[in-house]
Length: 259
Image 1 (cartoon, rainbow, N blue to C red):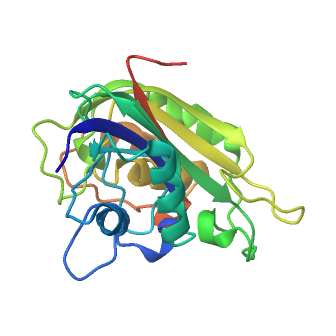
Image 2: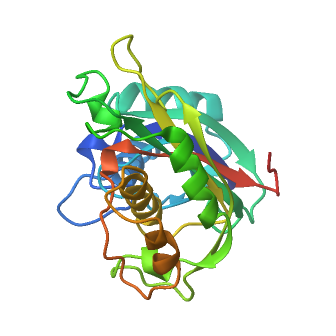
């Protein structure tokens, strides 16, 4: 490859038809789609590094990846070409040159995930693809109140799935907020709300497990003591995991840029 520089790209995608971000055998992934398209443009194989491994069916508004790229190939042209060739469910929001030591995952200082809730008896066809629809009566204010138990540094082993292979299950959540409106979408017939999680990092399916617990406690299906019990429980998580379709990787934060 010719002389290169490191590039950082921000990507949004509809994860419905993908088996997640990371390349895996015999299944379509977002990473694979982008790498194949870049290879088509470059004429040789290329590997990109993502900020996080979103699971099958999970979406992103601000996934980030980095890779070396030839200096001779203009970045504005690269962005236009990728968006022209990629299917409409993947869009490159921006591309910029960064320092050679930048890494989409290792350089991150925080992440924001959002989970979209559309609590209606019958799903809205224009929102169902991107939100968890249910008919239970759930007070968003109660969900916000319960969620504050998770803010701070905790051992989240009790919300960790058995597939997780990490050195520690301790994580720090800076804030959890319940906000009006769906993450994307919205029609006059289908109002909703979403939960925004902001933390240093997250375990495999952690956000979906936290959400499943919060909703089941808020609707009265589980006692409030369940939250503290699971915060002191060992892995694996034994509760309900919220559906993948409602989860979005909203933003990856670098250089200690917080609020």
